[in-house]
Image 1 (tube, one colour):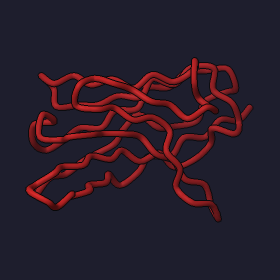
Image 2 (cartoon, rainbow, N blue to C red):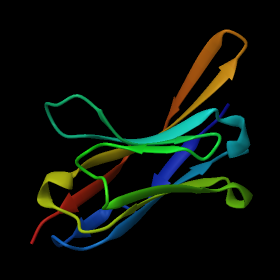
Image 3 (cartoon, rainbow, N blue to C red):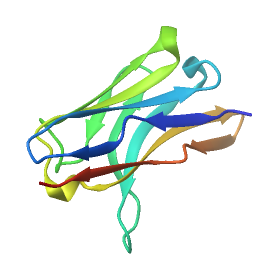
Image 4 (cartoon, rainbow, N blue to C red):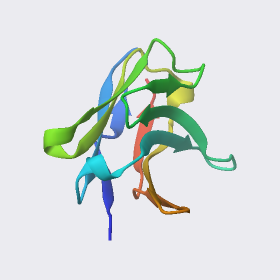
Length: 119
């Protein structure tokens, strides 16, 4: 069973930075795609950044130029570097990994880590 565990959330002032980590229990080579999502109370979970197996990246317009998604295959870990944080970035952040197995797509989620941007 694949497990994803996020860490690195916390309280930061506007304009500050945080780096989130997502550690996989197995090799992240197994994932066809990975990404970071976030959710606030009463709202649907939204995509923040996506990372393809080829290394391609996509970002939500709201975080372009401020957030960077990356992975360290040797450490089986994905990261989200968040700079110039704004109060509206406050949310629970979830990492996600998807694996194709034949015709089935398996989606895995971490437990989430809280990010609060406030002065």
